[in-house]
Image 1 (cartoon, helix red, strand yellow):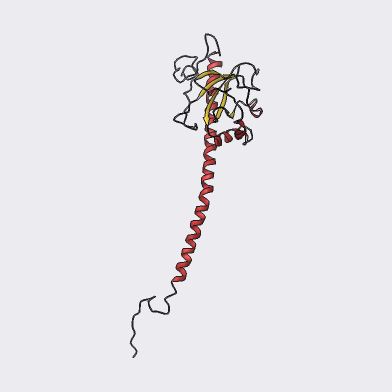
Image 2 (image 1 turned 180 degrees about the vertical axis):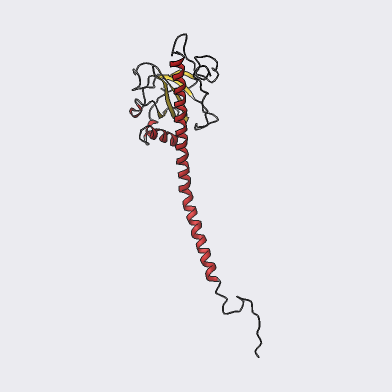
Length: 224
C-alpha cells in the first residue's frame, strides 16, 4: 500500500500558485478605492467650503435684519431720532437708555457677535452714516452696519440679494469708505456714494473696499 505523506499547501506543491491570483485582485481593488477616495477628497473640500460660505451668509443676513428690527423699535416705538435731545445711540457700552439700540428698554437687542467675520478675534461691527445711493432721498444721512468678511461669503451674500456672484471681485475697485477705514461708531463716510451701481437701492449686500482690500457685509438699518 502506498504511503500518504502530508505536504503543506504552497510549498513544493503543484497548487502553489492558486492563492496568488485572488491576492493580486484584492490589492488592485484596494488601489482603485484609494485612488477614488483621493480624487474625491478635493471636491468634498470644495463642497464643504461652499456650504460653509452659504451658512455664514445666511447668518449675516439674519444679524442684519435683527439690527434693523432693533432700530425700528428704537425709532418708531421709542421716538428716537438721528439728532437732537432724543438722538439714538449705537454702541456696545450704551445699554441703559430708551434711546440706546442695545438697551433692553431701547432697541431691545444684544450687540451682534463677530463670529461670522473674516477674523472673529480682530474684526468688529461698524455703524456708519452716509447717503446710500437709491435709498431715501439720496442726500440725507442713512445709517448702516458693516462687518469685514471673506470674498467667498461676500459672493454668497450678494447671491442671496439678487446681485451677480462675480460682483465681489469687481467691488474692490470702489472706495466706499472714501480712503478711510471704518473706525468706531457714527463715522461719517463722505464717499459712501461711490458704490457699484449694482448695489444702488440695495438695503443689504456686500462691497469691497479699495483702500483696505477687504470685503464688507452691510445692512442699512436707518433711512433718513
